Image (cartoon, rainbow, N blue to C red; front, side):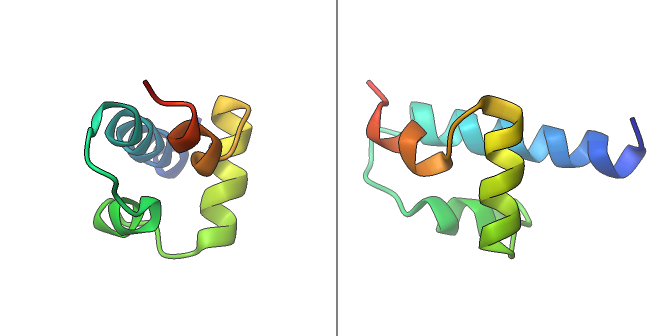
Length: 63
């Protein structure tokens, strides 16, 4: 795994954690931009590749 991919995976995990643990209704892409993701299409496909579902699905299914 390249360093770039490693750090992208860390940021994707941070996004996943923020979505699942934040009790406030928050815009997913606002959190994503804070983590350095600016291309929404790439973010969604990278996230789905890692977790098996889109960020919006994570948000809808959080407890």
